[in-house]
Image 1 (tube, rainbow, N blue to C red):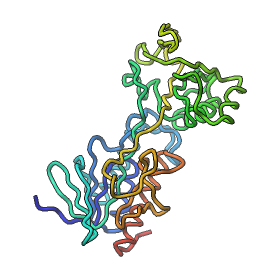
Image 2 (image 1 turned 30 degrees about the vertical axis):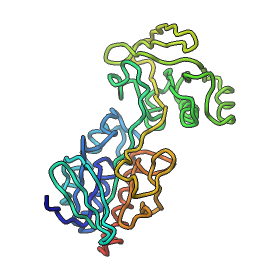
Image 3 (image 1 turned 90 degrees about the vertical axis):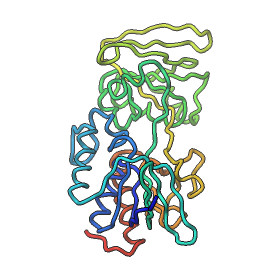
Image 4 (image 1 turned 60 degrees about the horizontal axis):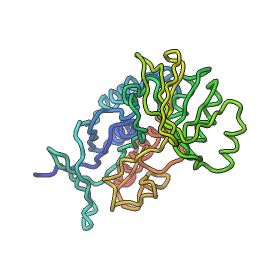
Length: 315
């Protein structure tokens, strides 16, 4: 299979990849953006986005569709193709990107494949994702103002986001499958001091039930194995699954430095230790994973590629 030569291949069509496509087009780069499943990534599962500057009360699909239209209007080449492999020629410094139907010979690559939230695995989790089940407190916490929320997870992220949710929720119940939290002692102490927080140790959620929105939760006592069901008014509560995320960094293994969780390590220009290989969005190590930071990463990465290739960067 003959490889098509490109200045840049962008792997991933979420906010980071679409932002990179916009900036690549404005820099007159011959680029292609490859997305394996659905443009927008995890964002399209979000029913309401209220923290993207200038676009209040947007839905995830509509927001990313606007990004796609903007990129396409600037001439971006966006294709629905999964990437099978990414290789670098040590002699030429160029990259070979293979999909099931094509191959691309690129001078530079931006990987913006994102990260998937780790699922808890209870019955009804997929059914109510985005409609009672959330994976991001900072994204969706305000939608549960005055309501009860249940947080699944016992690590630092779960504990910190549970504290964040006390700003909005009437009550925050932290559900931990073990007999202790793994979070730092200072955070645990803060949780224990909060009048809004209840800790349920040795407990798991095994099922959500209800109609369009959940109205019942089945809990299991992990010490005895016994289960019990609690019922609520439909739509009066939410479940936040905060048991970690899994970065889509498989293509990067052996090419760049990954941290202990599998996230790519970059500098502020989104550059990795491999010349010409840049990483943007949730797949890289960063303190905040939001739509706005992903879009920013994509802009920085594409601008860095333009500078790397000696192309002019439009204002």
